[in-house]
Image (tube, rainbow, N blue to C red; front, side):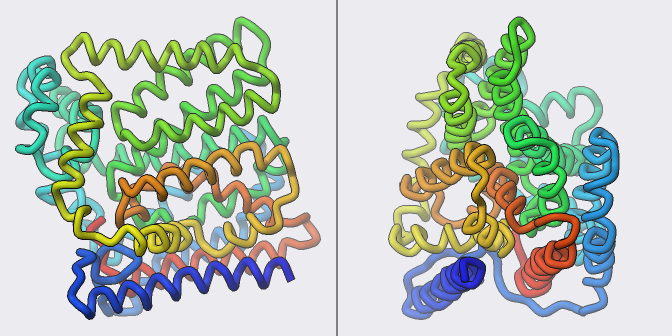
Length: 424
């Protein structure tokens, strides 16, 4: 009964968002999305192009449950990274090899701001004042991603190819980080059970955006602080400091991802370990002060971005619709197994991670600062929600049920990729 209710709510949320969104478009209120609740537009595809992701999915469904139980831990993490990247590439190949890099070459992407950097200190000092002159993605974020791509360019690694490698690596790294955190909090058996579901996430469709890289950085920020709560000094202090520095880097990549700090806060409070939080906060503040010394103040940038955001299409997009539509788009990104897993999850240790990210998702949704495109923007939240799939993975004797849910995850991803042309 729990499974049926959870699956029914997941389906109903998506159906309501589709029907409501199509109605708004039909009466002339411009959502600026044409496949609500997802960004993009509808399309039809040659079915043969979907054979590649179907083959990858079949391999994961067939061998994933057994390998996740039997491989040595480090070997499993390496395999998870490799297959996750393969799954993302297989999904992206529906538009050919150029389909993997074309989204990163869009005029609204960070790469097009790189030539404007010149001197990085001058760029940072004038970033807030010059914000209206930049493209949309640069306007909506701190300057961190542009500086990362500028650095790669200076090293001779500029262009869409390097950018693609960066975002794919980030997406895969976020999965590994979430599994490491789950192992720390709930045990290795739980992490092994969830691994195939994180690999086969529908969200991999959108790993052709900077947000996949943000996911990797932010996930390891969370995980290092979580690990610190279970260690003794001095190792705990170093882990917390590393996590704090990565949280500072995360803040310079995306304003909204500071909400992910809720996860290690929940874990630290439950474990009664406040010291790692203090050290992590100092590390993060150190990064913010370093950028301030270079000319960019995070709070000023956030305010400038908020002004630009509400001066644009966000002011015309209805808040009430996206309050629901955002959750529907995110539901598609995490898939039906996550919805059922959330309903079934009884492990209080796993809830420390999952509950923290659900609070972050709720705050992000209520803020109204993410109207549409959350299938991309909320990529960093995805791995943490997918940890709830440990509740549907079952035991070795229930691997058949696990495979059914994995098939459901893959089917959602393939149907979306076949039916919707995404900007990413």
